[in-house]
Amino acid sequence: MLNFKRNDLCLEDVKLSSLAEKFQTALYVYSKKQLLENFRSYKDACGKETLICFACKTNSNAAILKLLANEGAGADTTSGGEIFRCLSAGFSPSKIVYAGVGKTAEEIEYALKNKIFMFNVESFEELAAIDKIAAKLKTKTRFAFRVNPDVDPSTHSYIKTGKKGTKFGIPIEDAVNAYLNAKKYKNVEALGIHSHIGSQILDIKPFKEAALKIKKTISEIEKNGLRIEYINCGGGLGIAYQKSQKAPLPSKLFSEIFNVFKGENRKFIFEPGRSIAANAGHLLCKVIYRKKSGGKSFLITDAAMNDLIRPTLYEAYHDIIPVKKSAAKKVKSDIVGPICESGDFLGKDRMLPVLAQGEYLLITCAGAYGAAMSSQYNSRPMLAEVLVDGASAKLIRKRNSYKDLLFNEM
Image (cartoon, rainbow, N blue to C red; front, side, top):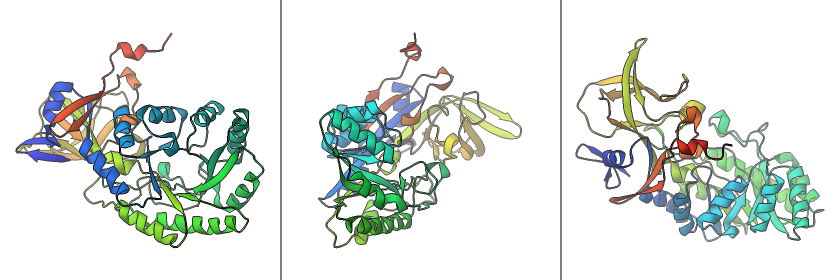
């Protein structure tokens, strides 16, 4: 929902420069309209037997989660803390699924006591642990084995999760035996099958390839007298971070997946995150200093790698836009932060107008894996977050103070 009104870049109907002046920078800003529009593109494209679980690891702000819970979303969680956040935000436990390769006994117990819908189980030992804890609590629960289909989604190596040799799931060739062996446990019920092949995927083909492999596996499982009711296809649909990129629509993803299972009586779960949150949020920052060194020009901002780690960690590209239109000459610049690391950059070799000290820049599409992955490295306080709704803006996370840096320290 970014748009220029005369010379001012706005988020919905609010000038970004006014947000910077009111709430100070650096600052995360979110569009309520964009967030809900993105979620509804999934909700409106799927059938009644499909549960859309927001991958809350992408953005776990309480206000963002509450908006999605109120829309009827489910939640894809990967820790006990995420389950706690989602329950606190109003998600129904019956719509919470729980993945992750390292669930602790305490986390499993917490999930069982809160009666979440399903565990996505990633190892044989994990299933044994869940059964043992469920027995202690005198309860039963449902699960889906996360199956690794050995599909290459052609994305960054750090976010490939469905290839052979990654830590995620069980090998697809072991899936049938896994389900048969699970029958010996009395406190867990096999309700579905799960796969998730990676993130920032811009091609439907890997999703379809994984679905075809899962279909074949289900057929082998059901020949042995078991029934797979739910197919959890994970998430991973990417967004267009650059103008040269084009992201598939959720309706296209659903069409391809549903066609694979055409004529079968199945229920589906999808776990989108980035494609709901990423382009709904942005990082607003200010130019502190300008300098030239070694033949390069640098814009030093008050945002840094601790606020947005993706460019450093994944060599990820985020478009960077001045919040005021300018007729000034453009120069090639690196946009960097104040942290004592050469890896502290937000963008390299960007053609931007010559900017004065104190002018504002917007790092776009940072709503997913932005604030959620931020830290206090270099003892930099966590940023404030603001939600824009039409012409109004509301603080949804206070900026930390220096005193907050010592919170819980003895």
